[in-house]
Amino acid sequence: MQVLFLWDATGSLDLQLGMQATEHGDVEEGLRIKAVSMAERTWSAREKIDADMERIAPQWPPRRQPGVDRAILRLAIWELTNSTTPPKVVIDEAIELAKEFSTEQSPAFVNGVLDAILHEKKEAVEPEPKSEIGNPNDPSRASGSSDESNSKLE
Image (cartoon, rainbow, N blue to C red; front, side):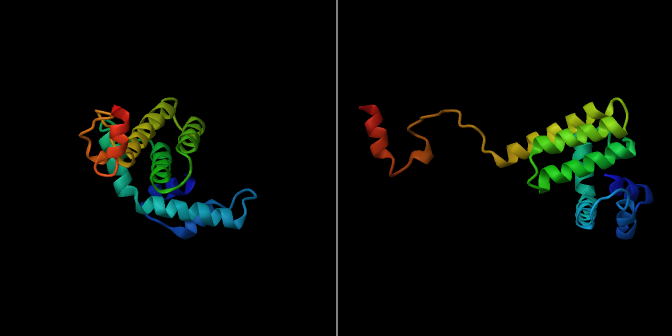
């Protein structure tokens, strides 16, 4: 999040600045590289992510959001849509970051945007529920399942 915030403030992706920003503390080199790489992929996808945020919360487009919220949301949306991290973990971490580093209203806003993104992702992956379960005219029951259909009717 910190790297994304810096790049947003400077208006450009600067890998050296990103690595410098992660030098504090006793974070091992491999983790720093992974963090900057994730930030780089998020930054590269920011136009699509920002368009998604604006569609979901048109009253608060990215340009009107606090910079911290924008960084948190960009990273979390990228992670929800491009990684195997469990969605609950992504959303909980984003909310905690918003509580610690942003405004009093930010955790609820972050939660609402990420929840909407997650629902859209689930809708895109999961088929719509069938309205008539067990319908003998259902095309998915074609050929090969006639024996099964007949046994249920007996």
